[in-house]
Length: 229
Image (cartoon, rainbow, N blue to C red; front, side):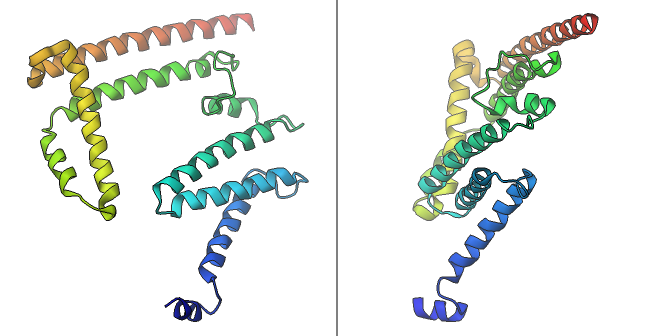
């Protein structure tokens, strides 16, 4: 079987050759987008091609362990590549780019000012959005009877159904977390859609209030900045 496959391809191991070609092309794309193609930055180019290899592995491997390992290594390498480029004498990245992407860089202290009150408030705004989305999702999940998901998870047996089973199990865990959270404040009233809706609206009202405070605070800081200029 192996000999027939190699013979039909014409070149032994041609699948691996094609896969490596894809990696090289992806690496070259990253090199080009980072402006490294005409530079003497050998390390930067190597890091770009290594990143391409990891991204390709993460996207193609069927092993969950190997996929997660490749994703973790790629994430670490992205940060390292960012740090490598940030040290260039040209002062890359530009200030606005650095300010917008600093939340993705764990090495940047978030309390440091970007120079813009609006951009400095993005982290808090993102946290408020995340809290609001969580309320909406919790209320939506509790509109369903999770027993159908539990039955479905039990019926999906075998390695070929692993991804589908994990997806359903994730929904079950999210449902159970939402149920436990609301039960603390509602008790047995959690079975009432009206009671859940009322509790959800109360939480959203608190978030709206915090968003208004953030907006006023940011506007005040912006005005102070303009006056100082």
